[in-house]
Image 1 (cartoon, rainbow, N blue to C red):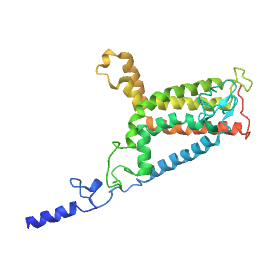
Image 2 (cartoon, helix red, strand yellow):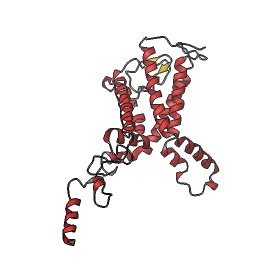
Image 3 (spheres, rainbow, N blue to C red):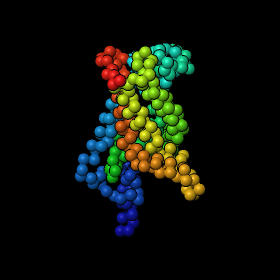
Image 4 (spheres, rainbow, N blue to C red):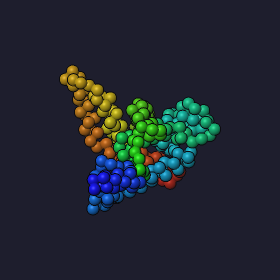
Length: 280
């Protein structure tokens, strides 16, 4: 009887159904999960939110127009590095890459902020769950038979997140410069501000908060220190970044929304949908 029992167990363990999270050594739970709440709502909302941004940003990146309304420039197109950029009246119009066959300059610029966000630890969790169901939620088995993590191409490229962080800093700095330029009127005179100035100011504040709340930033500041007492300044900075890091998910979402709203605002003004209200 012992032999028969062993044979039956081996046969069950080697069946196609016992793969992935159902391999030998895992709890033999026949149900996919034991959760009774609406666990599928968060990944669904995440997929819808990220999907909406992808659709909008793709449309705007390929539009190649209505991205400058003096003195505002869309964050999707700044810095404008192609020679087919609109004259930005003293703004960041550098013509670094020539005409690039007339492609939208946003396709050059967005490589760096999108690379930073795509490899972000929070965004990985978000789209892994929302689009790939890997896993769809806590305590819910993923439908994939095997799991290799981020050890193979293309997901191994996620490990370059820290390098995209280095690019994110100058990009945020250039957007900050654009905010400074937004305190001018259409003729380039200083001491003016409009609704667009406020929109861009809020956007860059959220972008800096999201950038500094990054896990890579926290590690760079104090992650490798063994004696905080010998580095009081870095310890204090590490504490500030740590407090921001607690809100990294929230900052990831609100900064994503704000950058889209800032671009949309510039688009409305540039397309003539309405005039930018001036405060002073």
